[in-house]
Image (cartoon, rainbow, N blue to C red; front, side, top):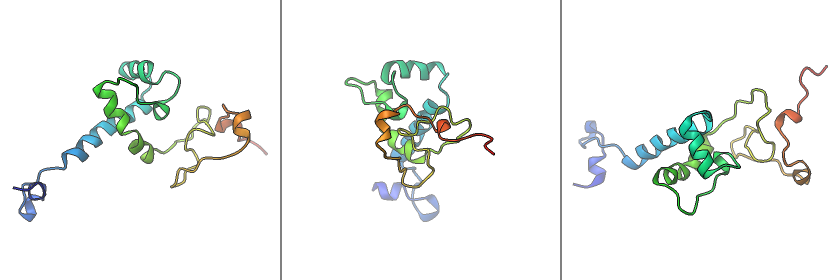
Length: 132
């Protein structure tokens, strides 16, 4: 029996099997989301110390000898980033140059010669709170 027939829903005469690759990517993506949203978790601190000590999850590289878990988390990085949206909040932890904070479909990033001069510029530095 072909996989196409096995994965066809039961109501259409198939066996109703799920696409296991898509399901697996979704489950790994859910765990990758925790890397971004729960930075104080013990396992997240361990992964950060080993695989991306000087950056965030999105800036992490694939190590030369990664574990099976990290390879899976690294593979879904682009998928998670495509669906990632900022909640601006206090704006103090969002990098102007390195994170997609503009809220556009194409994840456009600002380009300027000022990037080299102010490489650590945060969104909070651009806005005046309670300006009259």
